[in-house]
Image (cartoon, rainbow, N blue to C red; front, side, top):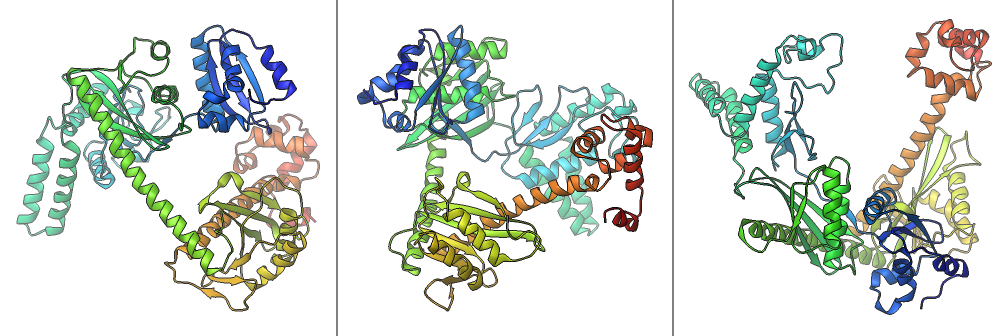
Length: 611
């Protein structure tokens, strides 16, 4: 039996035998795993009782778990729904989580609206709209959409709640259905015509474009003819009919593939017997899980997402854990019967095998990408180790960058590479305390080094420290680092010609721009730039957002916040009358007059007011 604290042992003894959800937490109080159980007492106790029968993932999780919280539910179905919601909220480290692959674009036609729109999207949502695709050539799809909007003046705006026609109407690109200028029946007829063209049921548009291309060529207008030729090619690509894969049906077909610790899932979307799309996912946190558990976890995540509606029939590669319960949950969520099947014959079996083949191919492609990335990262680390004559390969690299505006709002950023990969959760930001108001990068660097390495932080020590800058920044940071007892190698990367300064040599190292070692240092340096500048802009904009009102006599934090809540922007506040300003919560006539006077003063007058 695993050793546990007295407090946890007492909690385990008091667990009920009812259904519910349990959350394992680490010593920082972070939720690291969420699970459901029909019998909470038996399920949760098994984590500390059956250590010998646990998989590697559970053993690793329990090495960090120090506490457990439970939420009681009346039924197992309620526990399933709550488990799904908690996983989406906390993204626990040891749960199976989805990683979306790049999605291809679709042509979306909002046929469920009174006046439909046509646009490109990369997200399939079961909202009643019509989707065509996916398409691999984004440029071709954009070209066809642009031409369709030119030929058919359909609306492009999301909302029709307006009081007058917009610019598109005046440019004759829209017939303003928002104002009732075009009849709904006529508008719908045009949409149906477009759908027929895009589905390949009407060749009128292609014939018209061909005639225009031929006419332009005969008139020796070859550039115009070439443009019509490109439009025809794009239209042909868009209007290619989807293959018929089933006699009929509204199906989702799930495929699953595994290779060592990596798992991939594919969902084939079959509507009215035609394949309309495919979605790819990689799954993290699935090592040591059975295929049945992985499949169940995927179903809960995929169909638990907002806006995702399950098909009437879901074809699985094998039985999933709690399949009957999952079917009930999906049926309740859809408001109609949803069946989960593992077909063994007929065209549904062919679809199952097709999904499995797609999943295997997707995983094989991802595996090649991972291998290439790993080899590149390992090669870069090896080259860096040899270049800097390090004793060991640097597993953890930390980089520091200073950001300010003429000495104001000085901040610093620390970014981290772990095994050659950025580790955003380890990034840290610092607001400088000693050098505000004067641009002194050397003093700033000394302060940051002391704050990072002079305190007992639970961050772990790096194997290499990278300073953004040249020889001066390196010499400013080194004494503080050594005084803190940190003896790891320190280098500086100057941006001008990307030279590397080391502690033991007065001359910099200049590498070829294609060097993997240099590219690795550039990655961590550029990450520090990005992270630091983002923090600096955020802090500066927050300060500037409040600074205008802070200069007005009688306006404190409460009144300032009340004014920003009452008016959406500065222009709206400037356009308000004294009476409207005085009507804001917490304001009075005198304060309102002070705000009005300040906002309508000239630049010179404002400067005098603030001094």
